[in-house]
Length: 420
Image 1 (spheres, rainbow, N blue to C red):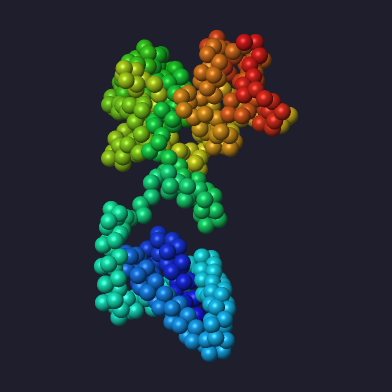
Image 2: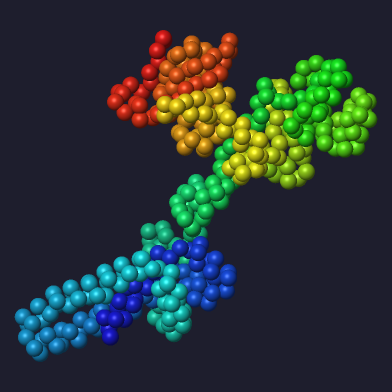
């Protein structure tokens, strides 16, 4: 009976100390009585440990006392010596290792049952536990630790990201990707998701009217910037669908178009995505122009861009199709990649590990690596992948072949560049 009690104390100690506190609190909020009691016990772990160790040591010493009396009667002093060794092995196996191993594998199941025993037991033995804690607490305080100030097990964003990433089958893959994307918002800036200046679709109000009408009809976006002469001379933002619904393309004229232009909203390129999300939530422009520290327009960002980032591509089909067009197999185990592709999106889609600090596009990464505009056929290595420049223009790389990372297995050179 004493060995069984010892096994209970040992196993439940491991179960209560090992149980996932967040799952426990979740079940407690759902009204599970055992979880509620366990959460209360773990609020003061010093008292709980004192109770468990008091019970465990009491059973150990009492069992040793009885065993020694029996061993002395049966075999005298030699019997007591042999009995001590035998009892040590029995306690170690049946009252320590086995129950603790089982409890470590099933902590929640045992902890919720044990809490129903320990909670009333802690009330009954309160004077003894109080005295033990008083003396032990004085000793512990000498080391600068306050046992009554249990630190909350707060998780940092990085730790929470690891927790979600390692959740395995408990969270479906798509939901896990969305959660990870949300947790990465603080580390990302508008610059990471914006449409670059060179790709902005906008209306030049100085153009001929038929050209403006053609652009309105053919445009794929519901909101377009309007400017005069050059993009930095912005007149405002035009809600195309709202304009066409109110006037129709036949009843529309230049005066009505310009009257519908709204004041533009500007955001700084290094603003975090969490701040951008807050701005959108407060009713700021759903489509904003991105400026640098000098006030020059660098790009455009919209709610769709933010939702596309959070959803991991589920929202914003046109963007996803564009991403797919940027990477095509070359038929030899490699890929033909548009050098204007965003590095983070390439890493996400292809499971690559290209550097994400510094340049945002593959073209920028190559130029940063080489320090010059490369020639066609020039080779280099980035993120463990051998690459070959296939097409270039006067000031940029247009197309790159990315080869299998395994191709570098026999190479001792970290970066290979021909023609340099």
